[in-house]
Length: 319
Ligand code: AVJ
Image (cartoon, rainbow, N blue to C red; front, top):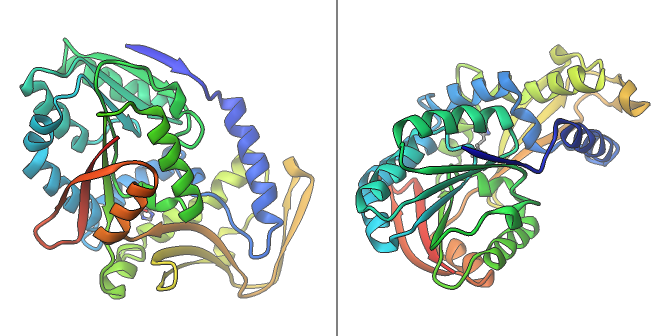
């Protein structure tokens, strides 16, 4: 396996310092969701995907199981690029289908975590011996231009993770992705869909409290990496549906007045009782919005598939 590293641990800790300073001195305070995913946070997310309330992973897998062969037949790509480490079994559904059509030669996973990339690539190397695996350690918001050429390519961005980008950043991301791709190349995009708020909120506020623990974990990451002294027992998990922006918002609410020290930033951060720090948005879509946003970025939506209950969609779009 080839591995290109464009994001080192030093870059990541520099980004964390910059983001934490900006977010903790904003009003309202916020933190980017990418810091959830240390080893413990990644395990918690794996557990979330198995929760009864969290339907997106199952729903998306159902779509891919049903349509992977159609996707492979319709596109006939030589290179599959996944924004994300490629560790999920959903990737395998695509790799198997594309392998069967005989056109696939290269798999390019792009992820911020070198460890996640290495372990996923090792497993894929073993299962697909004639497939060239070329990992890119980078951030999909900055390193799309690092994606190698390789015959006709398809970029897959699954899980609904595009919903973590607010509209302006999402438009910029899609435009940059379109610039990187050539005419006739493909994008396969997973998007969670608008539905009744109770179902949406339950998926981000499960009865077992796994999502609450996942949300609090970002404070654990700041304590460990920036020497902060967040008292996790003084924050509570909030998940709400914002009908204006059509997104689920996760927040951490301070249960008392407190001052948090962040020595690595030489910063003291005051919280008022009841004050809420935003930790993630997860936008929900409908077909019109997906096709409009892809169209504005220069893509042409070709196919739209959903799971039987219409909870989650996978769109095939052409550059
Ligand atoms: C991995 C970003 C798609 O937004 O649903 C799961 C992350 N957050 N539960 C999502 C998440 C809370 C998930 N994505």
